Length: 372
Image 1 (cartoon, rainbow, N blue to C red):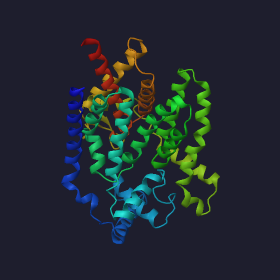
Image 2 (spheres, helix red, strand yellow):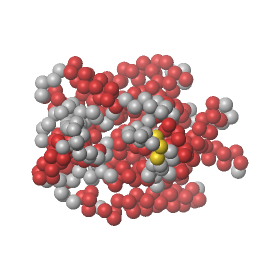
Image 3 (cartoon, rainbow, N blue to C red):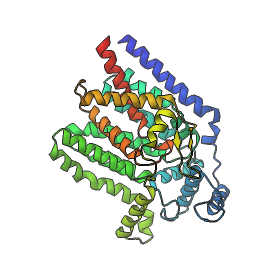
Image 4 (spheres, helix red, strand yellow):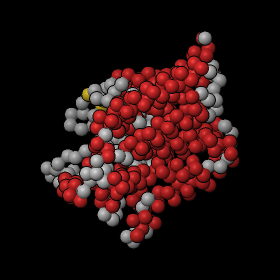
């Protein structure tokens, strides 16, 4: 018990130091009240000269600039279907809340980054029943450049959506024995409303497959009965749209357009695994070269490889694991299949890697349990 306590303290301290050393050197960028009406007008001017408004000789602006402008526009009462309509609006409303309260659009990355780590801890604690083991994937993920870049390159929607994805997995595991899925449905709605629908669809399929293989068909119907809550969250995020007179049918049309827009480019299937294991990123512009990714780390290959080894031994029935672990197994398999459909950028791995790190940690734990 004493050794476990000290291991937990060391791991927790490492996470605090790793995240703190990323945030504190530039803490002023997150708390200084700089977002004024003049800044908003500058963002508006840049946006109107960008690839989002012009087809001939546009200025190319990064995602964080788009989201900063969109959040400011929403604060000015602009309908979310008129600015950055290719993503759902809730994440940008969170950014808008940060602007409204602090006059700063970057602060939002800090609370959602911390909630991501807390959600990952809750999920790991539920699987491992051990604080020390639950902190291992957090220590790995908190060192991941992909995660840290989400904190420093702010504001981005991925870091806002990620904790809702992890919480969906955790809450489903908690609610499954009770056969009531209200908070699961709520989390799925938050996932959909924050950036894109696809992770929520894949989460729903994950839960359904888990229930089917657990021979809980009645629970599948219980889950479906709660899904209107998910739709309700998405509908509420478009309140401004309905106030502007659009109908529910028009709303569904907008969602169809977003889904079609967000589809992965069906080029170079399975190229994602070259990125994960060998840092060979298949681009989809220009000459479509294969280049290294700046944020790649060897932990991507190790965590994913250990996850696949664990899944192999589980399917071969050579390992006995908690049934709840199968929820994570289904998520990794389904999301991995989704990533395999076409070319992706590194940020698409954010919902995959922390869960892979949990499975990889379980693989190490199982190996040590059999050999010590």
